[in-house]
Structures are given as C-alpha cells and as structure tokens.
Length: 396
Image (cartoon, rainbow, N blue to C red; front, side, top):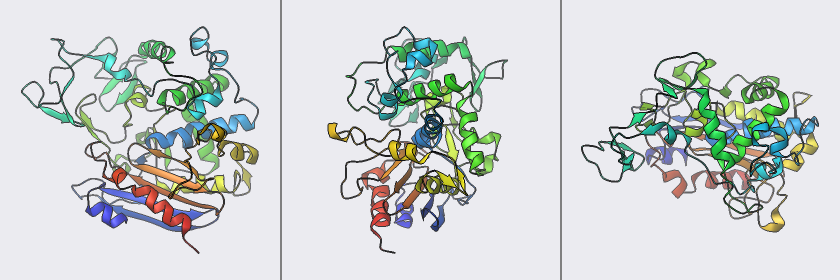
C-alpha cells in the first residue's frame, strides 16, 4: 500500500511504525524528501506534524497538569487568562476547548492583516494573468502584495519573533490576534465544530497557569521519555538536512517551507502554537504511543496518571452524537475505526491512532502538501484509515 501510494504520487515519501504497548513490529522509511528524489527518507528525519501537535504537544501537557491538580477541566478561560476576562469568551472552559464544543469559528487567517495591495485588488485570483502570475494552492497570487512594515521585518530586530526563514514579527501584533479571537464565538456552544482557535486558547491557559511556555512544558514530557527527535522549531535541535520540506508557499512566506511550520497561525506565534508546530520522526511518536498504551508508564516511570489517560481517551459526549475524546480524535465506530480507538491526524499528511483493547498503534508521517496542498489523493483513497483497518484486525 505504501509503495503503491508513492508510485501514484500521494506523497514523495513517508515513515511508518506499527507496534504494540511493548513491541515495534514495523519501522520503515519509504521514498524521498521531495520529487527530485535526491534524499531518501531516513529514520532520523523529522516531519511537520501539523494538527497532531494538538495532542502530542498541547493535550499531553494539559493531561499532565490535570493529573497534578494544577488545572481542572472546568476552569474558565477568563479566570486563567486575564486578557479574556471581560470578553464574550471568558466563560468557555478547558473541557469545551479540548472537545471542540466552544462554538468558536474554525480558524482565523491572522496573517492576512499583515498584507495589502496598493490598488485594493484581491490577494488571490482564480485566473492566471500578468498581475497574478504565481500559483498557490489552486489560485494565483497578486504580484503586488505589500507587507505591513509596522509589524513585519525582513531582518532580525530586537524583541521581534521569527516566523519564517526571512521574516520577523513585531509582538505588538498579538494584541490584534487576541482581539479577533475574543470576537470569534459565532456558533452555538455545546455543538461540535473543530477549531484551531480552541487549542490556541488551551495553550494560553497552560502558559498562564504555569508561567512556562508551551515548548518548555512539552519538552519536559519529551525529555522524561528520552526523546531527541521531537519538538518545536526543529532547526534549533536538528540539522536542516534532517527536516522534510512541506509546501512551496508562494503567497505569504515566499519560500519552500523546511524547518518552519506550515500552518500560518502557528507561524505567527513563532512556530510554537497550541494547534500546530511540532516536528518529529515516527520513532519518537512510537514511544509516546507505548506510554499511552501502558497507562502512562514508560521505563518504570509514571509520566501521566492512568485515570487521566482513561478519561481523556473516552468520548464523554457520545450520547449527544459527539464522538470526540478530550483533545484526542475519535470516530463513530465504522468499517475503519473501533469504539475505543483514539489518536489524531495532521493537515500535512500525518496520522497516528491507537487501540487500547488490542494494544496496537499505527503512525504514518508524510508530506503530502509538497509541493502543494492541492494534492489530496491520500484522503480520496482513505489511505491511512485503510492501513489502520488492516493493522487493527490482523491476527498475530
């Protein structure tokens, strides 16, 4: 299935791990970093995990703090994060944020506030022309886009946050970000709507409660698991040669993204965000999977409380037809997924799922967005779900 996917252009390369709570059955690399086929995928190479970061970074930290009684699922956002105290979202609680039942819109393209065109023409057009020469996604980009120099710099500046290879952001911009989020409650509370904003707010709660940044909190988990190939902003801890490229961004960052997060919202936050930003190899994630299947224990060390893992991986709102776990992705049982399966996927073409009943897990890391996010072949094929079905049902 992997070979067929690469031959048919689902993605240029991939890592896969199949394992159980105490064994790894398959750990393999396939294909290349990109379609030039110059660099084969190696075990130490790291992929942009996209929304898998919501679990492997943010949710695991939340689980740890809940287990240590430093945070409660009924804690309200406005009580923890002062900037939201007198806003419409002040009484959203951690449980709603982690189950995506807040009613917040699915996302905000914050970065578009940093761009303009001198003649007021749209940033993007469906037609190629002299003014719209470069393709991005399935549209063409206005060649006259201007960057707001009040907030953006193309060289390092004191206190500015690096958001891509050649771009730095004035942190004063974050005031407009929090103002926009505070006005994003546009859907009914209690209904399920997946939103990046939810996990960005969880990050802010974790950081306000602890006085530490999300990457510091997550790295504490990773170091206790003795993991070296997982973290935010990978160019700080591995070589560029070991980072798999994602998209060629002809719109905002004007670069091939390699070592800088693909997700634009996470980029605005300097690559450390509740919704995205983690890079890892499949081998590192396999250790986290084994810890979760071993009820929070790894090498005789209790990393997470077993009762917290049990609580977070269940579907507390199933009676309302919402099968989501707390932080974790879960599915209504179907031909691919069983009732207790839990995990998460990522926009860049990443996937991990676990079954606590037979103690199996599957990790698939790809860069299907290279060179462009228009490539959705793996989704049209139910590619990862099909492999998970085989792994889950295979008789050992």
